[in-house]
Length: 497
Image (cartoon, one colour):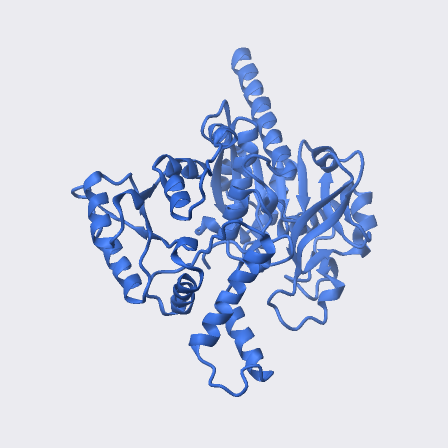
């Protein structure tokens, strides 16, 4: 609803913000790092049913707030961190967030002001007609926080442009914070530049003084190189992003970032053209206007996304990439549909399908995982988290990863049906990665294609701005080669004419 479901190494289905934290910090977080209202209330109800409250009335305060605090402290203790950053999402005053805000209010009393710091991030819109910064919404937001007992120590104004001095002084005065504690998070081209921008405003030094972390100083040299690579490019490629949630591009935010990471490593800007698959469901062929989009791209990514809507359209795009030798990358459902398309149009079994879309298909080339047949609850019951994969020597995937066993994160219920493995391989499909028990296929590729690779995994979740996913790196490199080949062919044609 608000973007992708990010998957942690230990199989947690969490908010996409944790993906940003992993990319910025280059650490693997746990499902315990994502605390939800549902988790908290379930734990409180279960404790009450077990008699742990000894018949007392169960209330928001102290029982719910105590559970919130317990979970925060538990993560802090297990991580052995010097500082624990806790983000309370939502908008100040929303009823959903009040128990969490009350919990952190109590934590200041219990941990002391010198060991706690409240940072309030709030929007400062700009009146387009006059260009004036409107600080009133932020002021009201702070007033609401103070009404429930929280006085911010630091204000971060989320704004289109850097705040002017007059607005900064006004925010400080009406928020009851020092002017040196007001910072601006303004719009920038490269999101990875933001920590440096905030630090240049003095935010890092101020926080360290406030928490008495004497002598702490950041070394930005390696991070500045990351930013440089993401901002400045020698080349560029055009990639078609084919999916069914293209109106909300945050549905694919980790894939977007993984492509940028790969592009940065190759000094290449990755331009993305978004193609909604749903309109392509109807008809036998791809309309000419869509063919023009596809033919102008240097590579095609078929994105994940459950369900029937857009599935036939995605398969038409996969067929186009396969037949026209355009670099192709399929992720999760994208791999499953690549298999269905191959069986229909190469093997010749026209009624082949996945049982997710057609349970009664006569050729179920993609079927439910055996362990999923008796699953009744849908939350957290898929094949989730990091899974070991054994790569086949001599394949493109093995070449990209450079080692025999890898771990990538998963989120799926379906797999390539083992009953069709031999048939697929006899027609030229290469299985380049298997699960360690050899029960399921994790990667496929085609030999007679410059780059046609698909995976059941989600390698985008482990891509980092300074260490791109090998699979995405290989794909963007193939896109570059495809662009160069087209450019050379175009130049040769122009000379001959």
